Amino acid sequence: MYLNDVAALSLDLDDTLWDFDAAVRGAETMLYHWLLQHAPLTAAVLPEPASLQQYRQRMAMLRPDLVDTPARLRKASIHEVLRLAGEDPALSERAYAVFYAARQQVTFFEDALPALEWLSQRYPMAAISNGNADLDMIGIRHFFSVILFSRDLGIAKPDPQIFHVAATALDVAPAQILHIGDDWQLDVQGALSAGFRAAWLVRTAQGTTPARMEGAADAWLTLNNLHELCLMADAHEHPVCGQGSASLSLPSYFS
Image 1 (tube, one colour):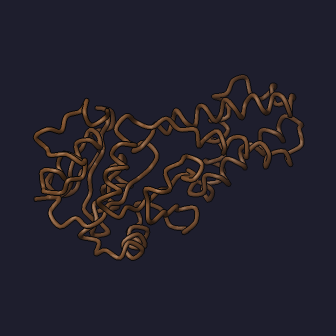
Image 2 (cartoon, helix red, strand yellow; image 1 turned 60 degrees about the vertical axis):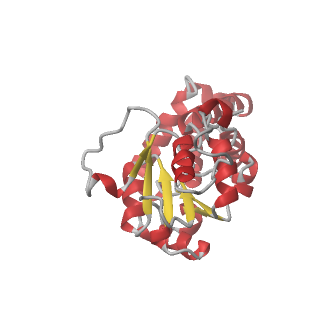
């Protein structure tokens, strides 16, 4: 069975444990109001908080070299807003600090924290992310024995190398690690190409049909939530969720 001999887990963060877009929208709203207060001329180039995302996207097109480093890309876009508005671009560092702190105010999916707690008690776990989260500020660092960000390593998913770094840090063979993530290319294909097992987390119907799906359908798991992973592991005689599978139900699991 697919979970047999799994000795460790690795997880994506954004859109796997929390709604990334919601976190960013909230952070951009905080940044927008901070800019209006501390750099009021930005009102001329920022009609609404969503305008900040437009400047970020524009900067990504102008500076593709920054795309894999979220902090530098965001700072560059803020710098450009300030410059265009006739404000002091040096404010970009303070402005980014406001955005970054607000970006960590995530709302977890309902299943995320209960599953992290149970899974981390039974498996060593690695976090592997191309994003810009701060697990200390978010409050979940203690669940992970290994934390890898592309911004620190200079390599990003789906590059197999970042998965290999995780395997080495966990001291577990790649074939015995199950990676869980929401992105087909970055998480599933990346993990499989590194010799990991993969679980594709599809929380909504949107995006469930990639343009190209390589490999046999049984080469990966498809999950709708992390609760399903707990049930599957429990069925393989791993008491991941702390109770027998016969008595495990969604209401009791989240009680």
